Image 1 (tube, rainbow, N blue to C red):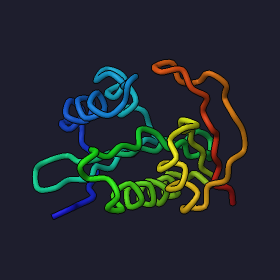
Image 2 (image 1 turned 180 degrees about the vertical axis):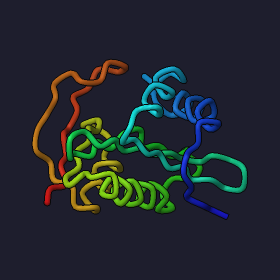
Image 3 (image 1 turned 30 degrees about the horizontal axis):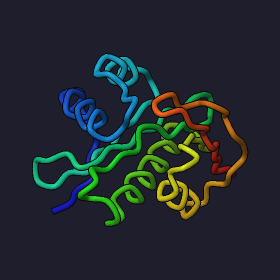
Amino acid sequence: MLNIRTMTENDIPAVARLEEMIFPDPWSEKVYRETFEQPGVEYVLATDGDKITGAAGVRNIVGTGEITNVMVLPEYRNQGIAHKMVAEVIERGRRLGAEEFTLEVRAGNLPAIALYESLGFVFEGIRPGYYRNPPEDARIYWLRK
Protein backbone atom coordinates (compact mmCIF):
# COMPACT_ATOMS: atom_id res chain seq x y z
CA MET A 1 0.00 0.00 0.00
CA LEU A 2 1.30 3.43 -0.94
CA ASN A 3 2.22 5.73 1.92
CA ILE A 4 3.70 9.23 2.11
CA ARG A 5 5.96 9.74 5.12
CA THR A 6 8.66 12.04 6.44
CA MET A 7 12.21 11.18 5.41
CA THR A 8 14.58 10.49 8.28
CA GLU A 9 18.35 10.67 8.42
CA ASN A 10 18.45 6.87 8.18
CA ASP A 11 16.72 7.08 4.76
CA ILE A 12 19.47 9.22 3.18
CA PRO A 13 21.56 6.35 1.71
CA ALA A 14 18.49 4.74 0.11
CA VAL A 15 17.26 8.07 -1.28
CA ALA A 16 20.68 8.81 -2.77
CA ARG A 17 20.63 5.36 -4.44
CA LEU A 18 17.10 6.04 -5.73
CA GLU A 19 18.26 9.30 -7.27
CA GLU A 20 21.22 7.51 -8.91
CA MET A 21 18.71 5.19 -10.61
CA ILE A 22 16.50 8.04 -11.83
CA PHE A 23 18.62 11.10 -12.62
CA PRO A 24 21.67 11.28 -14.89
CA ASP A 25 23.36 13.86 -12.61
CA PRO A 26 22.27 12.79 -9.09
CA TRP A 27 22.96 14.36 -5.74
CA SER A 28 25.45 12.39 -3.66
CA GLU A 29 24.70 10.99 -0.24
CA LYS A 30 27.00 13.72 1.14
CA VAL A 31 24.95 16.49 -0.51
CA TYR A 32 21.72 14.96 0.80
CA ARG A 33 23.17 14.78 4.30
CA GLU A 34 24.36 18.42 4.18
CA THR A 35 21.00 19.60 2.82
CA PHE A 36 18.99 17.49 5.28
CA GLU A 37 20.86 19.01 8.23
CA GLN A 38 20.00 22.60 7.28
CA PRO A 39 17.14 24.35 9.07
CA GLY A 40 13.96 24.81 7.05
CA VAL A 41 14.31 21.61 5.02
CA GLU A 42 11.71 18.85 4.74
CA TYR A 43 11.67 15.72 2.60
CA VAL A 44 8.87 13.23 2.11
CA LEU A 45 9.05 9.71 0.76
CA ALA A 46 6.55 7.59 -1.07
CA THR A 47 6.75 3.99 0.08
CA ASP A 48 5.19 0.71 -0.94
CA GLY A 49 5.63 -1.39 2.17
CA ASP A 50 9.32 -1.03 3.01
CA LYS A 51 10.29 -0.02 -0.54
CA ILE A 52 11.00 3.67 -1.20
CA THR A 53 9.31 4.47 -4.50
CA GLY A 54 9.71 8.25 -4.60
CA ALA A 55 10.96 11.34 -2.83
CA ALA A 56 10.49 15.10 -2.87
CA GLY A 57 11.91 17.96 -0.84
CA VAL A 58 11.41 21.59 0.01
CA ARG A 59 13.65 24.12 1.65
CA ASN A 60 12.49 27.49 2.94
CA ILE A 61 14.89 30.20 1.81
CA VAL A 62 13.73 33.51 3.36
CA GLY A 63 10.04 32.89 2.65
CA THR A 64 10.52 31.13 -0.69
CA GLY A 65 10.06 27.39 -0.85
CA GLU A 66 12.44 25.71 -3.26
CA ILE A 67 11.03 22.36 -4.40
CA THR A 68 13.86 19.86 -4.95
CA ASN A 69 14.55 16.26 -5.93
CA VAL A 70 11.09 15.19 -7.09
CA MET A 71 11.44 11.60 -8.24
CA VAL A 72 9.39 8.44 -8.64
CA LEU A 73 10.60 5.02 -9.75
CA PRO A 74 9.54 4.40 -13.37
CA GLU A 75 7.32 1.43 -12.49
CA TYR A 76 5.36 3.61 -10.02
CA ARG A 77 4.78 6.60 -12.32
CA ASN A 78 1.37 7.75 -13.57
CA GLN A 79 -0.29 6.82 -10.27
CA GLY A 80 -0.45 10.33 -8.77
CA ILE A 81 2.50 9.72 -6.42
CA ALA A 82 4.51 12.77 -7.50
CA HIS A 83 1.39 14.93 -7.25
CA LYS A 84 0.78 13.76 -3.67
CA MET A 85 4.41 14.30 -2.67
CA VAL A 86 4.66 17.80 -4.19
CA ALA A 87 1.34 18.84 -2.63
CA GLU A 88 2.66 17.56 0.72
CA VAL A 89 5.98 19.41 0.50
CA ILE A 90 4.13 22.61 -0.44
CA GLU A 91 2.03 22.24 2.71
CA ARG A 92 5.13 21.52 4.80
CA GLY A 93 6.92 24.46 3.20
CA ARG A 94 4.07 26.74 4.24
CA ARG A 95 4.42 25.49 7.81
CA LEU A 96 8.15 26.33 7.56
CA GLY A 97 7.24 29.90 6.57
CA ALA A 98 7.40 29.77 2.77
CA GLU A 99 4.79 31.91 1.05
CA GLU A 100 5.80 31.25 -2.56
CA PHE A 101 7.45 28.26 -4.22
CA THR A 102 9.84 27.78 -7.11
CA LEU A 103 11.48 24.91 -8.95
CA GLU A 104 13.52 24.09 -12.03
CA VAL A 105 12.62 21.32 -14.44
CA ARG A 106 14.29 20.01 -17.57
CA ALA A 107 12.76 21.75 -20.58
CA GLY A 108 12.03 18.38 -22.18
CA ASN A 109 10.44 16.74 -19.13
CA LEU A 110 6.86 17.14 -20.31
CA PRO A 111 5.25 14.86 -17.67
CA ALA A 112 6.88 16.86 -14.84
CA ILE A 113 5.89 20.16 -16.48
CA ALA A 114 2.28 18.96 -16.71
CA LEU A 115 2.40 17.92 -13.03
CA TYR A 116 3.70 21.30 -11.85
CA GLU A 117 1.23 23.23 -13.98
CA SER A 118 -1.62 21.09 -12.58
CA LEU A 119 -0.55 22.24 -9.10
CA GLY A 120 -0.72 25.91 -10.12
CA PHE A 121 2.93 26.55 -10.95
CA VAL A 122 3.47 29.10 -13.74
CA PHE A 123 6.40 29.18 -16.17
CA GLU A 124 8.46 32.35 -15.63
CA GLY A 125 11.81 31.86 -17.31
CA ILE A 126 14.67 29.76 -18.66
CA ARG A 127 18.07 28.93 -17.21
CA PRO A 128 20.10 28.20 -20.35
CA GLY A 129 22.33 25.14 -20.08
CA TYR A 130 21.37 24.52 -16.44
CA TYR A 131 21.56 20.74 -16.75
CA ARG A 132 24.83 19.13 -17.80
CA ASN A 133 24.17 15.44 -18.30
CA PRO A 134 22.76 15.61 -20.94
CA PRO A 135 22.94 19.36 -21.62
CA GLU A 136 19.51 20.97 -21.42
CA ASP A 137 17.87 24.21 -20.39
CA ALA A 138 15.83 24.44 -17.21
CA ARG A 139 12.37 25.92 -17.16
CA ILE A 140 11.75 27.99 -14.01
CA TYR A 141 8.30 27.73 -12.44
CA TRP A 142 6.73 29.70 -9.59
CA LEU A 143 3.69 29.20 -7.38
CA ARG A 144 2.97 32.70 -6.13
CA LYS A 145 0.55 34.07 -3.56
